[in-house]
Image 1 (cartoon, rainbow, N blue to C red):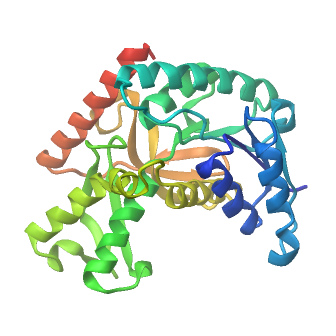
Image 2 (image 1 turned 60 degrees about the vertical axis):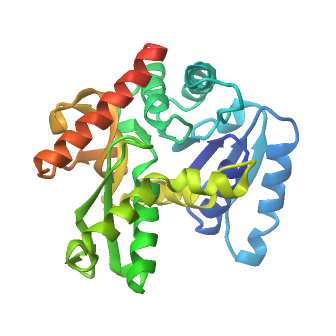
Length: 308
C-alpha cells in the first residue's frame, strides 16, 4: 500500500509541492483548498502527467478534509500573505485562526499523521499547530532551515564556481531576519568555507541568505518563492517516508536543547519514520549562541501575540 501525503493549500507552494512529491513517486497526493475547483483542476492536471513521467501515484483534489483521511504526512501551506496596510499582528491573528481551523480538521481525519508546517510566520505557526494538534513534538515540524540552507548553498556554489553537490551549509534560528547562518559549519567538499571566501564577502552572502525571500518577492512583486520552499518540504517528506534518518535543519520544539525551552526554533534534526527522531546539539561560539538566543526571543515575541 502506497504512502499518502495531503497538502493543505493549493496555491503555488502547495501545488508545486504536490508536483515534486508525485514526480519522485514518494506517495499518493491529496490537494485540499477552500476554493472550489482549484485543487481538483491542479490535481487532475498533475495526474495526467504521470503516464509521461512513468510514475504510479494517485493525485486527487478536494475541498473536503474527508479526502485526507489516514494521511501519513500532512503539509500545511494555508495562510494569507501580508497585504498593504496590514500590521504584523493582524497577519499573525489571521493566519493563527486559519492554522487552528486547518489543524483541528486534519487531526480529526489523520490522528496518526506527521505535520510539516510551511505557513508564515513559520516558527509561530508551527507553535500554533503543535498546541492545537495535541501531538508530541516529534510529529509537528516546521520547514525553514532546509530552504534557508539551500539558498546559502546556492550562493556559495555560485561564488566559488563549484557543484552544489559539493556544498553543505547550516542555518539555525528563526525563519527571517534573525536566522543564523553558520559559516564555520558550512563546507565545500569538506573544506570550511571560511578558508575559501574572504570574511567581508562571506558576510555579504550571509546577509543575502537572510534576505533570500524578500529578494524574490521584490522581483515577483505580486507573489513569493515557491519552487525552493516546496522542494525543501519534499526533502523532509522523503526523509520521513523512506525512514532515511537524514539530518536536516528544521524548526523543532525545544525542551532545553541549546538552552532554549518551550518554543520552535531552527536546529539540526534527524528525520525518520517517527518524524523528528533526534535534535543534534552542536557547539556554538559565544557570538553564535547569542545570535540564536536573539532569534529565539523574536519567536517568543510572535508567540506571545497569539498566546501560544
